[in-house]
Amino acid sequence: MSSPEDGAKAMPLEAAEKLILQWDSTASEDAREKMIFESERVEIDRYLLAVDEVRRSMSGVSLSDEDPRASSTIQIAMARLEDEFRNILITHTSPLEADSLAESTHSISESTYSFSESTHSFSESSTHHHPSDDHDVYGGDEAESSARRSSSGSINYRSTSSIREIDLVPAEAISDLRSIADRMISAGYMRECVQVYGSVRKSAVDANFRLLGVEKLSIGDVQRLEWDALEAKIRRWIRAARVCIRVLFASERRLCDQIFSGIETAIEDACFMETIKGPAIQLFNFAEAISISRRSPEKLFKILDLHDALMDLMPDIDTVFQMKTAESIRVQAAEILSRLGEAARGILSEFESAILREPSQVPVPGGTIHPLTRYVMNYISLISDYKQTMNDLIVSKPSTGSRYSGDPTIPDMEFSEFEGKTPLELHVIWITVILQFNLDGKSKHYRDTSLAHLFLMNNVHYIVHKVKGSPELREMTGDDYLRKLTGKFRQAAMSYQRATWVKVLYCLRDEGLHVSGGFSSGISKSALRERFKTFNAMFEEVHRIQATWLIPENQLREELRISISEKLIPAYRSFLGRFRSHIENGRHPENYIKYTVEDLETAVLDFFEGFPVSPHLRRRSQ
Image 1 (tube, rainbow, N blue to C red):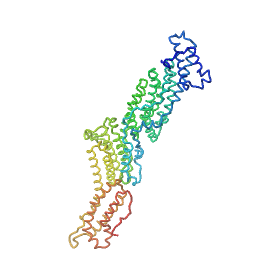
Image 2: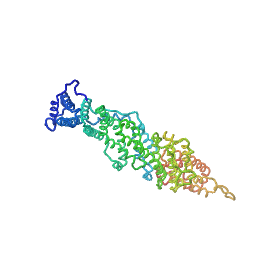
Image 3: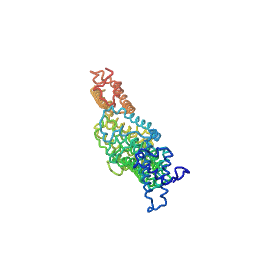
Image 4: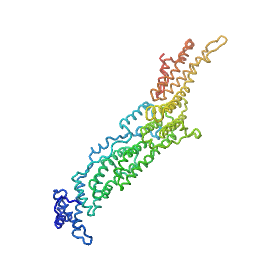
């Protein structure tokens, strides 16, 4: 133990004892009101020299021969140094500055996207809404995804930033604290030193926790929170955890090193754990509560955020808590990381089951995109954004049906068709397979076969659109499967056209209009009139009904209209050209030839807008 002054003369024992008693706060009002280490430097050094002299007088003396007066004096000195130690720590303790907190987090990417804010949950998937609500479905989804990616840059937390220690106490105060700690430990007052240090520094850590928004929540408190409130707390926790591990706890560790290094290794570790064990448990309890909470699809991405953030912090946790006494903290962090991964795997499996069993049976009006389709495709688009993490976590293939299983409640998927795909990619493909399987079942609830085909066309087209719109998702599904999806969407469009327009176009055939024999050889005007009446009635009915059907995607809507016109308009023009004169030469031709070609062209533009139209078609001829 060094003397406070190099080359200082030894102080007589009697003078040393007298000086120590002068600063006895239990015996002197003046001593209670003043602090030695706020005095002149010479006064501080004299007191430390007095303590050293009393300690020196006691060295080498057995307990039975120990001078009671010296023993009492050293107890008074230790009580005084304990007060001084506490006062120096308190005087130089203040919360971290906001700039320090901001600098430690500005370079880290963070996902602020809330899946539940922009999509329907399974419980909402059968909710009806006005058809016009779907007009911006495609653009809205892409805009949200684009905005999320541009605002966050990347959803992964892997970063190059690491521990950034800051000075919590000035250097001159460190020197005084070391001087006091050295003497207290040498005199056998290590426990008192640890307790004083821990109580003051833990209060400082608690103050910084409040500044960072780290709340004192038990695991039960966290699990009782509504998910919307919890999402915001997770975002705040991730930011706070980085600061706590990389700045706050690391700096507390450094302070312990500065004060106690070289004095006693045990006290260095003990003071650090006394300071941060409670706050560290408080910090990690939140993540632990999330990892063991009830699983539901909307939680997946925040759980992945937590997993990525904790994974990124693990090397720093191992560094900051490297001592043996902190092993429980390292173990807790590793176990939470493992449980978060298990929760992500479980949620994905439950999500797949939920899609397969989603029970809504009420058809969506107009055959538009089902909320379940939007929900699922937005979901797997986000999964593709988390591909790096999910590839590490998802290591087994999905549990699928087989064409040989004979189970009608599970669709077929043969892995041999997807050689070279990772388990995660197989899960993504499986999700689209079971989504289509569910949609096939929902299509059967439409009484109108044409509308059932339109419903499938809309929904499969939406799936194709989402896959094509995400490079990550397209890579995961593969072009072969994308071509298969595109073929199914085109097949649904062809099936719609056959179910609707074959009967209408059948009215424009020549068969059954010609008569032969006797004096009436030629065209049967009555049959022709009936044919025009039938065509008019059928087209008006199709127009009335299918104008209320909805294709929300502009290009798809226009392409289907063009396809209809390419079949309908030439057939009607030809039929009208061949037989117009037979009707116009008779009585009331307007009752039979109600529409010009241009009228039909205009009428087709009303199709699939999602709104009812006038009961009677407008006729340009009028």
